[in-house]
Image 1 (cartoon, rainbow, N blue to C red):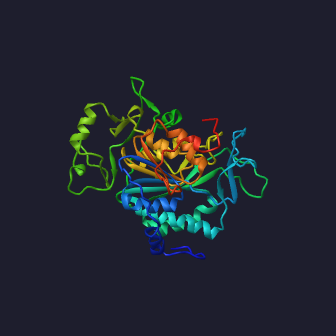
Image 2 (image 1 turned 135 degrees about the vertical axis):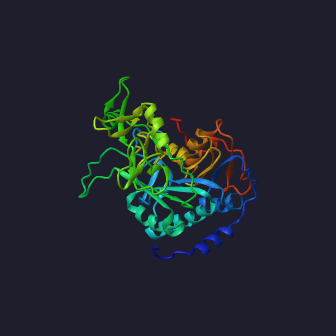
Image 3 (image 1 turned 90 degrees about the vertical axis):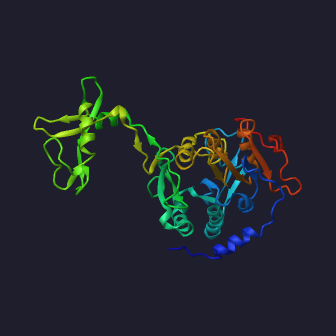
Length: 386
């Protein structure tokens, strides 16, 4: 399935455009993290020679095509980042067709950069997200779709318009190769109420536990898990969860509970529970007083990085904004590549990263000296909260 709109280019036209951009004369040390100031299509095109099939994780939070200018100001007194007299951080105003092609061009290059173990998370609102889902199916393959994650971003809304309130946006999660992507299966601890509900029994030491059957669905025709144990075979249509010798060991350790009628069940203790699988509805509210418009929740970014990359993986964000993705990657011992064309975004990132990160900076808007040493004073706007 594909989506059609005016002036949609072919994949090969976009890749040819990327190959034909002016290659910038600066050296890249792939052992270091990298921050690039400039148009992200041009930056991504320049990265292809050194980083194709090398990026393990991409997180992007692109503009949502809200038809607004996003601004910042020292005088801001609340979380609203669209002051009339502020400095424009970025403009978010295209036709829908222009917007979709803008994102699609960059997604095609991003796929080229992803490693075979790589994943991409695209953060978007629900107005444009379903169009981008079809585009991502087209570029990455519907078989590589992993999740449409609903992210609760704010408190419930009380809009006057004739519709339900909106307190969520969405994160589209795709792999480059469905069978190979890094997924560390991070678990989260059970809440106390969940422990009380799921582990209702208490042993003589005061430890909470529950019990499960010693057998599971499916018959074993010839293997050990279908054999005689303690005077019985497993019930019809079922098999022992482990072989009879292991069941004996569990019983000797006091980990099998026998009912008054001789029915055995395996004990499972709350203290041994490794945590629950993370589901596709996330509660990660954005900062109340962001240092940059649309700054995202740091805990959410750390979760994504832990889940879909390894230490020393490269994490890329080509709409880097406040630099939170880069900061989280650095904190978790990953290398980062950040790209943004906004002066204010670059200054924000330099304040956050300078003196704590070992990275190269390249300004591809400066033809004379793209790898100059940039200092925050190069910009007129002051972020007093940093």
